[in-house]
Amino acid sequence: MATRTLNRYGRRSVLGALLRGIGWLVVALIIITATYVTAAIALGAIPVNSSFAESPEGVPIYLRTNGVHAELVLPTRAGTIDWSIEHPPAHMRSLAEPLEWIAFGWGDRGFFANTPTWADLKVGTALMALSGFGPGAMHVEYIESPRAYKAREVKISPEQYARLVAFVRASFTRDATGRPHRTNLPGYFSTDAFYEASRGYKFWFTCNDWVRKALSDAGVRAPLWAPFDTALFYQLQKISK
Image 1 (cartoon, one colour):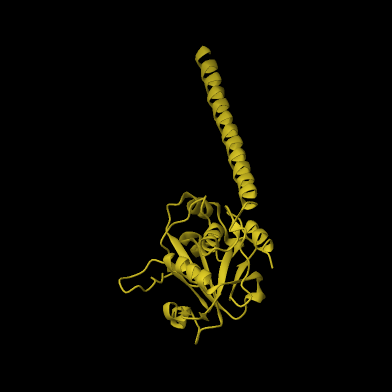
Image 2 (image 1 turned 180 degrees about the vertical axis):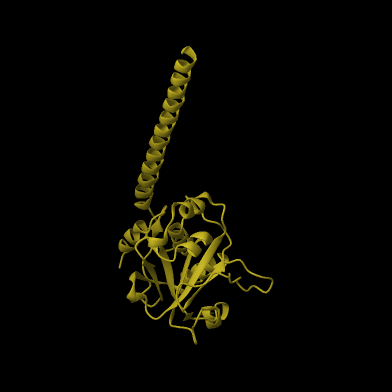
């Protein structure tokens, strides 16, 4: 009888410890999430390149979003830059010739592969992306008009555009001839393709923060940190006309 009582109390003790551990884990996750969101809001409100002003006769670029993931939309051909040389239509699923605009986005390769729509998002996929253990990928898509999406136009000088181009190009893994490596991931549409990226995803450096750094390095007004797309559009709205 005494042994049964001890075993019963022992099991209760273990169960109690397990429940307390789960409780502390939940509390820790809540604190971490709240800290992350608070930091995103606070740092997203702080601008870099706050004196930036648009160039009326400059190169038009766009920031577009699907509500979560932001991408840069650039003219396929502007000045001496022709993106169709590095990203020919043949790389896309079904595209006869380049369209007028080309969009660039960066993110986790596994996330891109397994989440064609947000309805396909799985917890394991998100956790793997946040861990930073998976490789990154660049998403490239030809589009007819940036205005078909939720987008914000910004006109930048040729010098600023050259810096933006340099940042985007440096985000691709390249072969000995300088060509970007196209992955075997199928595109979402007939006009897009995926390429290997030069860095992996981290919870502090997200797809939206990649856009932030691209704009910041080019001298365009941007937030100090932008894990979410909201801060990007907020700072672009503050640009002096």
